[in-house]
Image (cartoon, rainbow, N blue to C red):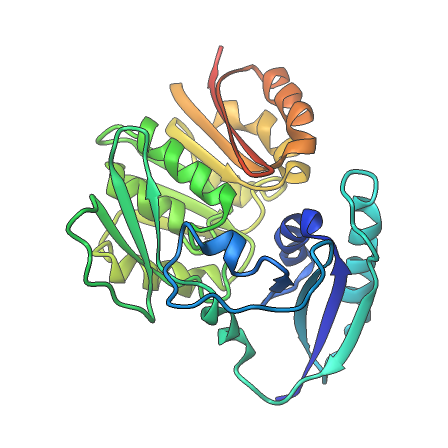
Length: 321
């Protein structure tokens, strides 16, 4: 099969938010290239024998995605252009132009594996988790409280991204044995998976992408959670009453690693999903949007009890007043 590779010329400042938003318009298989990859993102988190070099200028980044060349791509390109233009007021997009070239018939979905390697998360209580991609092995596991095998497939979420790490750290702190959890925007299942490791006994998740189904099933199975009490619900919790009914309510933990444009209509619904002593964990928040998100979380009846920053990303932990 032939694919067209579309490349957005942008800036390192904008690469994270573009790569996070592009899946919302139907794009999979995103690649990022800049002067610091993999060194800046990975040097302290992943293990390399040698860091590859490139000649990309420090103020330039390229965000690429692939589309089947036999299909009409005009709608996706229109949405991508609108996305780029909408971000110009909040982030330095740079050039913003989109170039195109046809690729060889190749397994491009797996190309990103070259740059995704095992990494660790260190928690405030002194515990540690090791995350190993399914195509790697590790002999050094004795110093870790949790060893997790992860493969996102085409679904979002490995645990390596700042927003996911922020959520995982909050879950480790707030999950109590026997809790139940609602994971809105499940993706690969990494947050629900970690919640079970931390003590949750029952969880549900929602996602719009059918690709989440095999990703969650595989990641749960390889981590000893094949029989976990987890239900994945496909559909939009914002406007689908059947999804809302299936989700139920009275959760001790609701977690949403979703961008602010989705958090804004979602947050007023969350009080009806939470138990009275429940905790609402949010991330996916670029720092320029943090004050706006804080305002609508508080307007929905929450008290923000913690804010955490990781790079240019923010997470909030909130409880009902």
